[in-house]
Structure formats: C-alpha cells, structure tokens
Image (cartoon, rainbow, N blue to C red):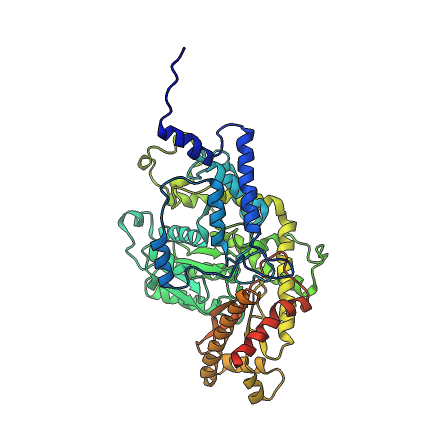
Length: 574
C-alpha cells in the first residue's frame, strides 16, 4: 500500500485559495457554477449603484471622488497595502465595487460627456472570453483561431471602407494613438527609406494636419523622434474641414524649403465639431504636387477616422427609399457625411476606434493598411525573435509595435460587427443624429442659447449660453445669436468673446455640480472647438449623446437638459 504523502503548507494554500481563483482546465460543472455565481453576484452588486428610472441619475452610486486633489492622491498611496493573506474572490469583488461610486453610467441617456459609448453586450462577452483564455495576437500559435478573428475583422472593415480585402491588412492596437503612431512610423519609413530605422531620422520630414486634428499627432511626432516642430497646421473652412487651398500652399512651402512631406492627415470626424476633411480633394492635390515636381515618392495619406469610420455603413444605404424611415433632416445629415466618408478608400491607411462609434469597451482600435506589401518596410528580422514564429502562418508581431496584443480587441469588435451588422449600426447612428437634430431645434428656439456647430453633421452639439445682461444691452429677442456673430467675426469684440468664454466655463462647472448633487445631465466643456476669424479660441459646452436610449423628443430634452442649463445660469447670477 502506497504511503500517503503529507500535504505541505504551500500545497494546502494552492488547493484551497489559489486554484479556486482560476477556471478549471477541464470541464467541471461545480467550478463553472462557482464562476457563474461570482459573475452574478458582482453584477448584482454593481447594479445596486444604478439609480431608478425615475431618479434619472446618470452616474453610479454616491457622488464621491477619492482623488480630487494632490493631497488625496498621496493619501491613496499611503493607504495602499497588499494583504498578507489571500482573501475570497467574493470579498474582493464586493470591495472593488465601491470604486465605481461617481463613475459615469455611459448607457444612461443623460450622459453626453464625450464620444464614449456604452459597450454592447456582444462585445462585453467577447472581451470576457478573451480575458478567460488570454490569447496573445503576437502570432497565431499564441492566439489559436482568435488570430482568424483579427484577419476576418480587418477584412470586414476593408470591404466596408472600400479596400481590396486581399491586398489590404489590419491589426488591433492600443487606441487611436496606437493606430496614428503605426501610420506615422510607416509614413516616415516610406518617406526616408528603411535605412532610417537603423541610422535614425536625419531629415526634417513634415506631417500636415488641420488645426483641429487630434493632438495625437504631437505624441506621434515626439515618440517617433521626428519632432513636434515638424508638424504643420492647415487652416479650416467654416465647417471645420481642412482648407485645401491652404494645404496646397503649405505643400509648396515644404518643397521650397527642401523638406519632404511624410504624411498628410485627413481628419474624418473631429472630437469636438465632427469636422470631416475632403480626402478626395487631398488626393488630387497630392497627385498634382507629385507630377509638378516630378517626385518619386507621394506623401502618405492617413485617414484619422476613429470616429467617422462608422458612417461607412451608409455607403450602400438606399437614400431614395430610406428603409429606416429617418427624418428628412437626419437623412440629409447622414448623406452629407457619407459623401465624404466614402472616400476613405483613397487613404493609404485608416485609423478606427471600435470603442467610439463601434460601441465596444475600451480599448479596441484598429489600423487598416491599404497595401499589405508596405509592411515589409517595418518587419523585424526573425533571428531577433528566436522563440517565436516557428509554426505560425500569421505573424503580425514581426511588424507591430506591441509584442503583446490581447485577443480581446478582435473578439469584442468581431462580436459587435456580427451582431449589429449594417442595419444595427445604421440605427445606432441614426438615433443619435435624430436626437442631435431635436436638441438643436430646442436650442434654436431659446434666445439665450446658440448652436455653434450647426453646419456639422455628427451627433455632437456645441452651444454657448449668454447671460441676460446681454439681452438688455442688445435689446433684441435673438440676442445670443447676434452676440456670437459679433464675437467670431469682428476683432473689436475680442474681450467680450474672452469674457463669455469664461462664462461658458463657469456654467459648465455649475452644470457638473448639478450632475452629482441634483441628478443633472453629464455635459462637457471645450475651451477651443475652433478659432475666430482673428485667431481667438471659441469655448463651448458640449452635448455628445452616445446612448441607444437617447431621447429624440423636444419636450424630453427640455426636461432633461435645458432646464438644468437655465438653472445653472440663474445660479451664476446670484
């Protein structure tokens, strides 16, 4: 008879405390039930933080913030202690829920803080599966057939925007900045040659982007070593899109200075005003520029479409029949955007955020490359990675910045793309634009308010509110509109613009206080959504609906939003 071995202390802890924290490596019903119970209890705990439908509270739990200043941050550091002994999973999950107090509830219709959507359940489940089995998209061997999901997702997006899915490629990355950075590195390498990867950047290659292009361009020029001083800003048109005449002038300036243009960025939906650049026009200018100066290399065109890509779902929509029965205003807005978005296929690379208009959780971004042959410029030598790529057909880790890329990205995106399809995404976007149109009509009828991005057609609405004293001074009904036109068009009103910019900020502060203390709406503030004709920043309050539960009825919007704005303005008068 075999002698029974004594269980050592570490083995006891392993069996009783450590192993229960992991999923079973084989089918085991009891373990599955334990896991389901943990998930159910955690969900139950966090759901108790939501307010009732009648409360209309758009944040979770109590309005507390444990890091409101530097002293608080240091207190958190001092109090942080790793426990000596293991605790139960249920205790940990119960404790962590407290940190969700004060967190925005993105799915609530009164949460309009920014282009941050609620994550749809299919993407949540995809993420969960990725977290459970931990695929790494460095190569196929480490990610199994999840690698095929990345390939398939990239192909779906390629077809959607108009690329040839066989010639194109794409991979998921860490947010829009990751996509931008990859495109910038590829553009710089194409411009300066593969040798620049070994000897460094020795020429002042230029990146051209509109004045409202995302600040990620500075991160990318900095982190690639190109330098932030090699960014050139292009003026805007009234609709916040790039001024192509100025673009052409700047390109000629670059040529005269002997500085090659590495990349031109077409911003396809700015965060604040949903400005959409004309890629078709940019491409034509590039073609003329290359032909005129007999250049061997064409500037790389990157479409920063992290927000605007989703409007590609309308490329095949029947606008004449309008099967979704959108209102005339919404249909026209969608059509106008689609007419610019449909030219994404002309860009050399496109940046896409599923965690914005794709309705997945953070983070989930993709860079899609038109010609996969371009990637040869960025591939590393296989002998540098001796323990990888022995048996895989799919080896994106040879050219991606990351060595570790979670399969969660691909799982979340693929699940949403498959679940919603063209129909679902059309309805999601259409609902948000219907809501935006209703809100703008309400603002238009309020004498003290003016919409400042009325020519833009995304879901975001930017507006300014003016104090009553201006009505008395101007002696007219539509005083906000009159005052705003003065401020943006005539430099002699610069000080009034600055004063009213400060008023917008104070109003936004008061609205935020009311958010937590009076269940007000979650609106945000931008200090400069664009510049006046004389170069001054224009501040505005921002309503960015992203919830599928968003209201499209004017009376409801008055009750949930406008009422609080007026109350905030009245509070400032005291």
